[in-house]
Every structure is written in C-alpha cells, then in structure tokens.
Image (cartoon, rainbow over all chains, first blue to last red; front, side, top):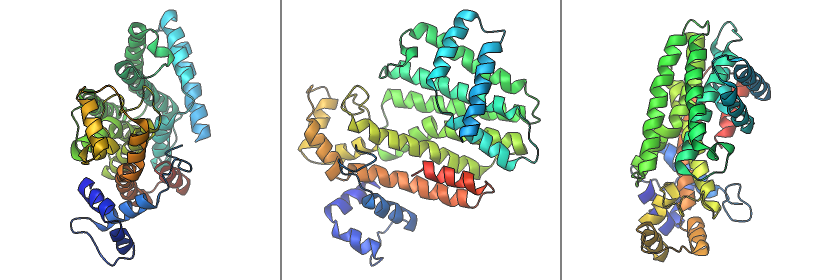
Length: 53
Length: 297
C-alpha cells in the first residue's frame, strides 16, 4: 500500500481516473481502491480536521 | 452503551469494595485507579455480544464485563509504566502500582472462574490466549523493530486487536459456547483502527507522547521515512541520534502534504470496510451494528 500511495501522490491525476473507474491499479483490490479514495476525500487540513486540530 | 457502562462501573465498585482477599492498603489504590476510567468500551463489547447471541440472560455477565475491564486497565497501567509518557496516578508509585496490576489480573480470572456460566472455562482459555498475544505485541512495540507496513500491522493486530477481539469473543462464547471467526475478524479490526487513529493523534501534539519525538514507528512515520526528501533525511538523522532537533513546521507540513496521514487513513479504511461488511451480515441488532460502524469511522 505504501508504494501505491507514493505513486498516487506523484501522479495525483490518477486519483480522478480511479474514482471515475476509468483505470484500476494492478494488485490493488476494489476494496483497497475504495479505501484509498475515501482517505483522499477525508479532510485533514490543520484547521478543519477531526484528526488534526 | 451508557447503561452498560453504568452497570460495569457499579459492578467494579462492588468487586473492589467487597473482595475480602484485597487488603485495605491495596483497596485504596485499586479504587483510585478505577476512578480514572469513565468509559468501559471493552466490557461493553463483551456485554453486547452476550446480549445479542444469548437466548437467556444471566446478570453475572456484568461481572464478566467488569473482569474484562480490569484486564484492560491493568494492561493500560503496564503500558504507561513502560512508556513513561503519561502522568496518570499509577505512574507516581510504580512499584505499588504493579501490585495493583497483579491483583487486577488475578481477580479478573477468579471472577470469571467463580461465575455460573456453562462456558466459563472456554472463556478463560480465550482470555489466556488473547492476553498472551497482546503481550507479544506489546513486547514487539517496546523493542521498536517494526519498521515496515507489514510488521507494524502485525504488531498492532497483536497488541491492540487481541484485546478488542478477546472482549467480544468472551461475550459470544458465554452466550453460545462457540468461537466465531467473523466476530474475531471484525473485533480485531476495531482494535487496529483505534490504534491507527491514536497513532495519527499522537503526531499532532508536540510533547512527550509524540511518536516522532520518541523515535517510535507508526504508519505515517514509516511513510515519511520511505520518502527521499529533506524531511526524511532530518528524521533519519534524529532517529540515529545524529541530531537532537526536529523542525515541527516542516514535519507537520510533510505529514499533511506528502500523503503520510492519507496513507494511514487508507489502511484504517481497509480494516474498516472489511469489518463493516462482516458486521453487516451478523446477527447483532441494528443499534449495535451502527455503534460498531460508528466507532470505526
């Protein structure tokens, strides 16, 4: 998962394609893809996050 | 859950106040340690699984839930004494606190053994198995050798997942006499999720609980260390004791912008989604399903 995240971080445009189901990542299950997209959708900015206040 | 917590708290008070095997000196400390706890999520997990799967109701389940909470409190105290990163009352007199811990663990097993549940010995076997697994995980955590995703997740499954799994499975076993791989899977995930959330929380405060400052490993830290940038070099130097300073601003910025926190959240979500799917198909009542799904968010 770590390498996949680094790849996505460097290729942030892939996220949109993933969410539109136009691409998939080999070796990553549907459930993991969902988890990744949900993580990127979670607000973690210093001001607003539940995780980062 | 509030009613469960009240019942468990009352039962704990009765156990502490009335047990003849505890001396007055020990009892005073026991009582003060118990007062620190305001919530009883582990005992509540046990209760929930008993109530939803049992066809009868034996009120002694509150004593069993209280015994579970004694085990959890004893592990929390040991963890604080080992990590030396908290200022709870039990950290003031470690030698005496260890006696309270020993009495909590002994008393917890005795309470379950003396209950009238048909499957109390099966429950005790589970408690032995899962507490030993948790101790193995705690040992790995203190050794600080889990520096990659796989070994770190395995360690927190042992350390934290075992305790939530134990709590739920004991309730299920008291009700049915059987173990359930489904209950084990989602309840273990509950512990892992809480640990990952705690790990993220630990990084936001720049104090003696901060895993980075303590040179510990967690998912966001493993991610940061895997990067090839100035911040990762700075952290590596700090972990190798080549520098005593860390730039709070740079590190916070990297945690948020490099994907480190997102990465930890994604792993948490993997556990959450798998657990939610299993919970959805169980015979727990809807209120309890919603409660479990909510605490995994």
